[in-house]
Image 1 (cartoon, helix red, strand yellow):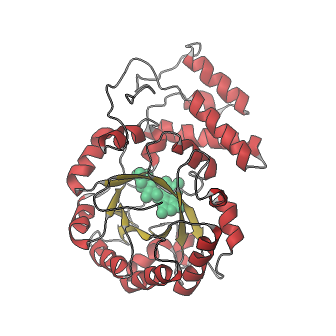
Image 2: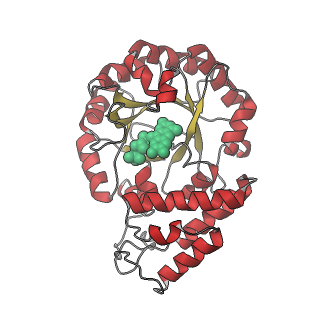
Length: 346
Ligand SMILES: Cc1cc2nc3c(=O)[nH]c(=O)nc-3n(C[C@H](O)[C@H](O)[C@H](O)COP(=O)(O)O)c2cc1C
């Protein structure tokens, strides 16, 4: 059952188009830290989406809405036409969706030009209309939520937009603390998220720029939230989700942070390869690309310092060999000391 409730903490894996696909959701689900994941957005354009599209892009729907590692997956829709969004939501439900999220935050110019994502932040009443149409299209036990940025170009647009989404019948809101104009440029503004939480009457999930446990604590303090969504931070630092989940009481408490060995990426990436082979017809090409994508994020935003060695590799075998050499100290690695994998006490 996918839900966000007032008094129950939750940690959600963010939707990231081209990144958190089915194999990645399955890998992330293995940590046991996440309450559920949100699918990458499915865009409703000139026609409502058929059932088969949901099965193609959210294959978990064919196995009771769970990743191969048991993590529930919520389906996200994006679009500006309330009728087609409603029809698509119903098709998603028929395909097996247990909860629907609506994307009001995507900043991509093509999406925005075609009346989707963050564009709708300029039209609060349309947010209400779309949420209401989707809400009415699926049975009442299927939660419908909305994911918003703070505004198109002003932070305070969130208040009216959040009210409208709640009026439309959203079960909860997820707020990424940036405007569309900000793109992904720091900082993320958490304070307005807390203001909305205090006044809107439905649960609010805080999102944006939680890169480490200290930032998580600051976000918690600034927003007063008990619901959080992690995106890039969860990938850049694979131990972060478990640290956050421990602090939220979703996992046993972290007993100590060992800092005497670098994080071993190999087992995690091997799992990604296994899952990619299950889902992809073109797995060999896919896995090289996906591993590099992940490690590139870890190098840009986390502590992984060896991306230069990995990026030259042409095959998964070569990548794993390079990583093994780094682990065994037979290449000059400049990896700093980071958290080990044995974080959570049993
Ligand atoms: C590559 C990428 C793809 C994204 N795709 C989606 C998407 O499909 N749907 C959505 O609601 N948000 C999407 N987002 C936004 C994230 O869900 C999240 O709100 C944002 O990254 C801020 O959280 P973070 O700082 O924890 O990453 C995407 C972000 C990135 C970086």
